[in-house]
Length: 313
Image: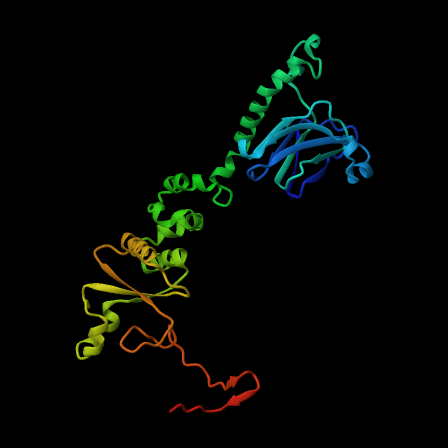
């Protein structure tokens, strides 16, 4: 059985079965419901491509009308006696996707010939169970997508992370967790190292990390009271600077500190400092990192005048 799919449809679609006399089997619609709206599903099949492109209302077979607010956001129906290369479907509302399958198949084919009457009660009754069976068969066939980080649904990502031994899934959130899962191997290999922390910080907030360990400042701090002001806990912690293009709120900063503490090297503690894009006396301002002295440029008023120097007062 072949499946034909279209996405982001206005309200009218034409599917090409590829051969004349194609017998269509099933139609599935995926849409976004809005209150007080009706879904009218009409269709017909034809071997004439020109007739299909013209959207002939007189040829449509109206099949169903339902209130969207009271219905699921998926519509599923079997197409009985629908034959023609081109399947034309009119819904009068936008669709996220439309799926049709061909050729038509029925469980009647497994019964004695005397019961194989198309369109009979037995045919319609068995088609309900046939649809359930086809859905289960499709789920099994496509089950591999559940284990693919790119295609897995958001709800399944925590389970996938658990299988891969990734902790802190609640700290990452669904938006970042997918990207983290792509780097699970690197995170496991680099756990407890500077490289591992750099990767975690980049994945969480996209920031550039700078590490200041005791040996970096050991030769300078003994006789430098100003340096002691910036590193009051020298000898007890390593200091981690993070330079960000956008500020973190308090909740995000606490989450980032928790991730750092869970993935830092053993038997050491860390102090987190988020650098701001500014030169502020008495704070962490580092030339070439979060502070830049730019080239001289002329000041302009209204775009018509230029001031080489300006003195106020």
